[in-house]
Amino acid sequence: MLGTMAGGAADCTYWERVLARECRLYELRNRERISVAAASKLLANMVYQYKGYGLSMGVMIAGWDKKRPGLYYVDSDGNRMAGNVFSVGSGSINAYGVMDTGYSWDLTDTQAWELRRKAIHHATHRDAYSGGIVRG
Image (tube, rainbow, N blue to C red; front, top):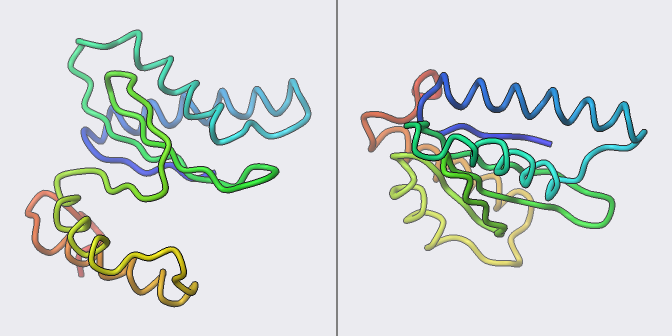
């Protein structure tokens, strides 16, 4: 399972660490990994309690469950959405432009990786607030 961060670094880091701890506890108690859907629901429920407190967070949680891949978006108000394609953060407008023109269901792995690279490149280089150490 993988989580991405957009928003305040402190908020994102804290809540992703809390989620990682809860996922590990689930695995120890149940002797199986938590599903991507359940992990995203857990995060949404935890941050919902702090709605209106000024959290700044947009997280994508992705992974492969027993039967299929999962991709979810969770924000700092506890909203949760399942989807196939997401881009989060201030550079997401630029990334969506690239993805909208190049995405199709029949992409090969190589084509998908190249599309991902282009989307990240445009998001990080055309938005002053995106990228951090990714810029180079």
